[in-house]
Each structure stands twice: as C-alpha cells, then as structure tokens.
Image 1 (spheres, helix red, strand yellow):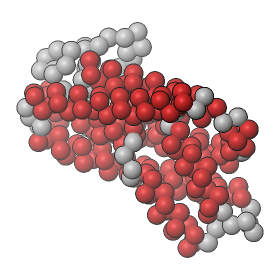
Image 2: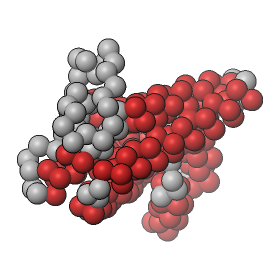
Image 3: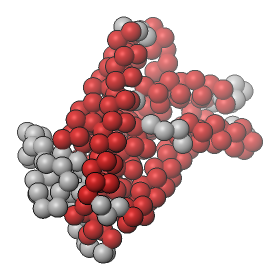
Image 4: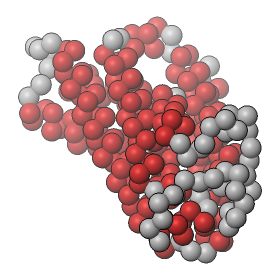
Length: 239
C-alpha cells in the first residue's frame, strides 16, 4: 500500500468514524457522567472491538457472510436489543447525575457514578443482578459495555467489508495491508471517541440545573432507543 492510498483510506475511514453512532453517544454519556479518566476504558473497549472485526475481515469474514447473509441480520437484532437495554437503564437510572457533575467541576477526585446513591441524583437507581456485583463505573464494566456495543454494530462490519477491498493493492500481499488498515481504523476511532468524551467533560461544567441533567439522560436514552429499534427492524426484515 502506497502512502497516497493510505492517506485516502484515512479520509474515508474518518468520515465513517465521525458519523453519529452508538459508540459516540456512549463516549459522550460516559464523559459527562464519569470524566475523562474513566471514559478511556470505554474507548479502549470500542477500539478492541474494531480490532476483532478487522481481524475477522482479514481472516475471511466476508466469504462467510456472503454464504450465510442472515448472520448480519441476527447480529442486527442482538445489537439492537443490547442498545435498547442501555436505553432502558439510562432512562430508569440516569447515568449522569448533578452530584457527579458538581464534583468534577470542583476538581473532586471521585467522579464515578454510584448507582445506588440517591443524594442529588436526578433519576432513581435501577438495580440489576449484574450491577449488584459490579460497579457500573468500574474499568472492566465500561470496557465490556463498549466492547459489546462495538462487536454487535453491523454498520462497522459492513463498512470494513466494503472499504478494505477498495484500497487493496492487488500486486502486494493482502494480509499486511488489511492489518495496516485495521490498525489505522483503531487509531482514528480512539482519537475520535477521546475527542468527543473530552468535549463532553468540558461541557459538563455548564450543566448545573437538575432539569437539564434529567433532559440529557432522557435524550441519550431516546437516542439509544432509536439506534436499537432501527437495528432490530432491519434485522427482522432481512431474516
């Protein structure tokens, strides 16, 4: 792959990465509720998901999907269902609370959301068997959550399957080129999600009214619901 072709790939990949999607919404939500330090784990989860999908494409995922296209339909339904679950959680509990925004603004050390605390919390906590054993603000929880969102995102799979062949040099070995494009896509995604999260952290200082925090929580839940519902619809219609 020549440098010129690689630059062209960077522009094409950047256009896709900057398009609004579940990963960006998740990064913004975590940036508002947890701060930059914790959101990095969520960003890494999405980057690892991209690496897994890119590796699968390199190893021949396209041939499998061509043989059995219903795989993408099932993946759409699974991914949409998980996004609906995230929407329900955010609507009921509200990951963003005025208490955490105030702590972050004053330079407090602890910006982790305590799902069970009701002091200054805008939305009531929503207990579940999973969260009873793991802090929703912990690094493993954030990493796994973002990893699942990334792995069940058919848009990324379809994009990589369609994009990679366009920039392959047929006169050179394909595997090194595919790995380079995967690594590039991972790096661009990391930079993009980090930028969105950083912007959210800065904007959190402007949010000091309970009504505003409640509105943001509900809006994020509705966005997740929209993404999830559309994925399930298209998945069921193509099964």
